[in-house]
Image (cartoon, rainbow, N blue to C red; front, side, top):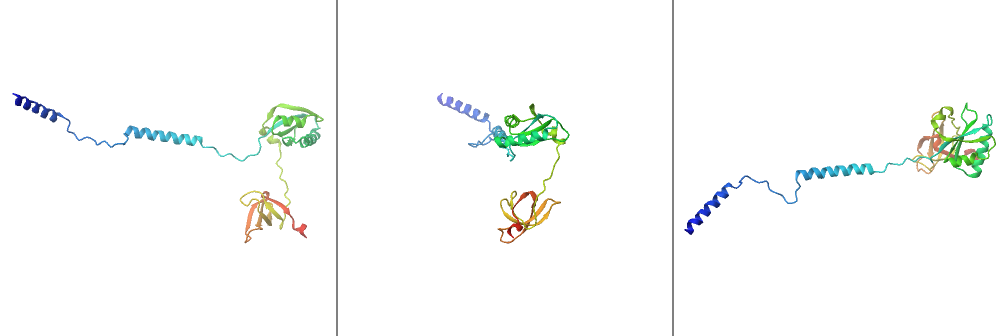
Length: 216
């Protein structure tokens, strides 16, 4: 009886084994990521790169000091006098005043370019024929059409000894070998160069420090 029971149990086991899934299984590699995990990881990396681009500091342009333009009301036909008084006042008080403008065709007003309103007010304070600043800041484009661009005449001659004040050869001493005022250029030779090589630079990129006539 016992043997029969054992045989029956063995038969049942064999049937269970034959019913098990015998299809080949995909081998599981320890540490490998699933497709969903890979996609999630790639999405995280993409977001991190976008955040880095947004956080990259923008290159600051080397601009001059921030200034504003203020309008000063004056007595008509006294604009030039007011300009002279304000200029002297700003220089004496060492105020942040950068320019004083009298637009063509406008009477009774001049304009002060200053670092802040306080500097402009102090420059115009107590000035004869000045009637005070207008409350609003003036946009440069409002008066641009009334201004005249004037080119300053540069006194530079052949054989002048000069210093380069801008560009890759900044602070280098040079000798002027040719001046082309129409193009606004000069040809120079560096004094400290082992072999003198002609270099063309803008005429406003050099500053005369010695003249050949002064040596004679």
